[in-house]
Amino acid sequence: MKKINRKTLAIALTTLMIGFLFGWLFFSGADSKPDDHNHAAMKSGSEVWTCSMHPQIRQGEPGSCPLCGMDLIPVDMGDKDDENSMEVKMSPTAMQLANVQTTIIEKGKATKELRLSGKIQVDERYLSSQTAHLSGRVEKLYINTTGEYVPKGKVIAEIYSPELVTAQEELFEAQKMKAMQPQLFEASKERLKNWKLSNTQIDGILKSGKPQETFPILSDINGIVINKKIQLGDYINRGSALFDVANLSQVWVLFDVYESDLTWIKTGDVIEYSVQSFPGQKFKGKISFIDPFINPATRVAKARIVTSNQGGKLKPEMFVTGTVSSQVKGSQFNLVVPKSAVMWTGERSVVYVKSLKEQGTHFAMREVTLGASLGASYIILDGLKDGEEIVTNGAFSIDAAAQLAGKPSMMNPEGGKAMTGHDHGEMP
Image 1: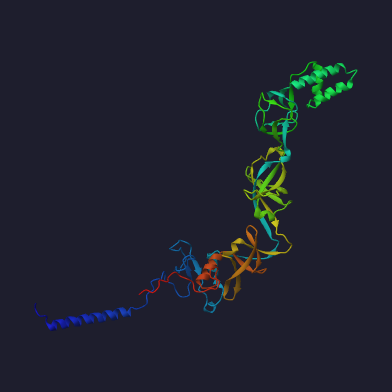
Image 2: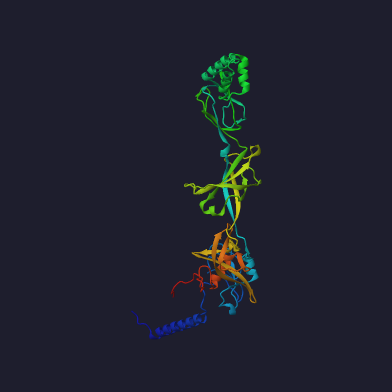
């Protein structure tokens, strides 16, 4: 192996050291502490746009979140004098883009609106059974299907009755002794009347001079046949039910009232309801009865409205939906706020109250105590005063801005620095 020239080795080492020196000088001059998390170049004092779900996203202009696609919301960086304030400041532009809407609350009578569903049903007081007035065999049947309308006095069947034949023969015998025993003649006629024979029918028998083998059964009631209980050729006894008949000139509207809503309704309340078969038409009625028992399977009670049904327009089993407005018990006036104004977290309920100051519009979080739910609103028991202006739309956008600014918010009532999601731990 040839010996390396010492002069050549010295030149190489010197060149290498000079190269390291120039490299160190070059890179140390470019030490500007790069920010790997700079998502957009933003001028000092300009508005910052961020995502309420991903606060680590910061941009200098509106747009969509690159992570979830939600619309970015503006973050008012606030004045230096306002950094320690417990309120969130928002510019008019930011409020408009976040669709913030406010309402001045006032005291008034609290009214709860209940939505109920139910059905049309037959009025039980108008349900009847057509019975047979004598025993015998059904020879002819004039009502053959359910749903037929039966007027009072119509012949519905003809029956052969041996008992009736015997009673007619006795009537003829009594007629022969009418001059001597008029009481016997009248008793024979009364016996036929007990079988619902009219005077006209009895006079017809006497005029014919011979017994009738079959006898007609006349309807005692008006109504619709809802249950047919006999067939042609059946033998029936006196008092047997032939048909079940419903008179639909008056019907019930039965609404389902859940157990939790029973305290809000009472007899005499007016319900406005609609029927699916008649879109656009409105009906009204007063609650005449509330079921004293709760159905153990469905946990509902029935609220009843009695209504006339001229022309048979309303038919049993039709679906109905109705609303009833009920004032909260007590004569005191209550503060009522829309449900959209209230935010919940665990056992806490908060709203945002608007205030106008010299620096601009501010919003402060306020914890409230909720009372009864009134459908689309709540009664406020504590936390707000009459005449205060609260946020009814866009409260979540304001709360997101409060979290980012380290102000008290729904999830962090004490305030503090917002988590941006950029804590990667100790990294070289």
